[in-house]
Image 1 (cartoon, rainbow, N blue to C red):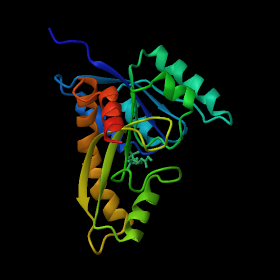
Image 2: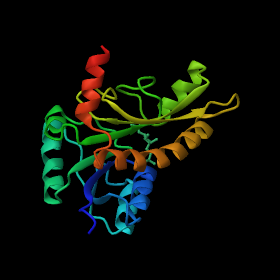
Image 3: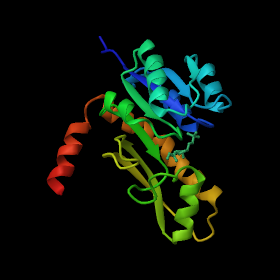
Amino acid sequence: MRGARARLAVLVSGRGTNLQAILDATRAPEYPAEVVVVVSDRPGAYALERARQAGVPAYVVPWRRDPADFGRRLAEVLDAHQAQWVCLAGFLRILPPEFVQRYRGRILNIHPSLLPAFGGRGMYGERVHQAVLASGAVESGCTVHFVTEDVDAGPVVAQARVPVLPDDTVETLAARVAEQEHRLYPEAIRRVVTGQVRFDDLVAAEQLAR
Ligand code: GAR
């Protein structure tokens, strides 16, 4: 008999193409995870519609002035659905430290650059591609990493590279990176939930390398 699938919560703020890639991957019976709940901080996020179309419960938890309060409400929703892992998929808020500690080693994020390059506070979405183009870099890509209290600085699970072409615009570069994101994220989730990649091992390896 096949073992139980890992229970994913996916947090979103926008159009949700990465959520869609994860939902599509979970349709394969051999995929080791399922999406049990989707939460957006924004009521208008199209990602909510994608969740509903897939038959996955979708909630709005509005952002709060007190981030710790947001974190508590979010955890209540996740607990109610017995989520084991939290996947940020275009979720543009910085999670409060209490929430990150509570789910330590169980939160993943996807970022549209080759971290540590072009990461950190204020670096999200199109801004990342703008900065890449302005820098003259000849290569970009995307990164799936574990979330820690330091923004975009948690241990890297997987990366994919793309060329930056001389006539690229933000739109063409974003589309090339997004294509890789949609392939990379479901694969990175698979590696993490099956224990092929472990948070504690990556932290230990980083400490050794210092
Ligand atoms: C993706 O490119 C993701 O890497 C980026 O937002 C986009 C969301 O697209 N995330 C960040 O910039 C996080 N710092 P989507 O809503 O279509 O998945």
